[in-house]
Amino acid sequence: MSKKLNIGVLGCANIAKKSMIPAIKNLTDHFNLLGIASRSPSKADEFCNIFNTKAYYRYSDLIENQNLDAIYIPLPNSLHKEWIEKSIQQGLHVLVEKSMACKLEDVVHLNRLAAKSGLLLMENFQFRFHPQLDIIKKLLNDGEIGSLRSIKSTFAFPPFNDEDNIRYSAKLGGGALLDAGAYPLKIFQIFLGSDIQVLAASAYSDSSRCVDLWGSAFLGCNISGVSAHMNFGFDNFYQCELELIGSKGRIYTDRIFTAPATHSVKIDIHKSTSGKTTLELNPSNHFEKLLLNFREKIAKTEDFTDEYSQNVNQARLIDEFRLKSGLPGSDKPALD
Image (cartoon, rainbow, N blue to C red):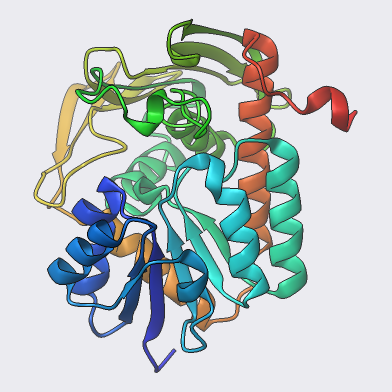
């Protein structure tokens, strides 16, 4: 793609302010930021003063800008379906914060709509594009720890200081599963593919907030026999871990999902024959790498089927977790 990708932002979430919009602005050879929309005029003005772009006070006004190629949506989960759908109807490629939607049936619908329109629909799992993931894949494929037997992953962090945080609102699609829990489920897909099922799950819900605060699950693959165990939550000690256990060793890293752009990731390799070695990586901005991948996919007018499949499979796993744990919101009975 020779021309820059014209992109807009729907919403003024913290992740947009701290990570995504700065990444867009850093990639001036590849992106034009045409505007930021918020239903709060003061918030829109604040963001646009910081990032030197146009403020929009209605989401619809921004997505109807005929110069836009793509939209980034960091809105609350409950608003994703409506604004993904409207953005696709405007002919826009969409990058949306996780989770894509609150219901499996909605994710299926949105991906069918994107496919029919020939548009890219991608969830913002930025860790997919950090170099550490490729290195871990190579170590595994090269047989450094033998045959893979199991995977463990935890993403958990302390409570939020603000009680009105959207993650504590059931109405806005809050809860730990759709937030922190989405990360381990995604990384299990990356290493184990679509042949994975939630076999058992548990979750704790706070009755005063009506959202789940933490949980865990055991998953398995029918074909390979590899198992996966996940923990997640936002009432926990901070953990951001991935561990792969093989027949001859173990790979471990402690910042798999949220490595800052200035952080040197360390990957520990424990082998039964030679003990422990540690690889230290150069810092990398995975938000910028995700954006470049998003743009490259669009530039090559790729078949976006793999992204659609990942999106739907991610929603399926979330739905299976709900069924196994007893959390409300599963679509499974309606889809059978």
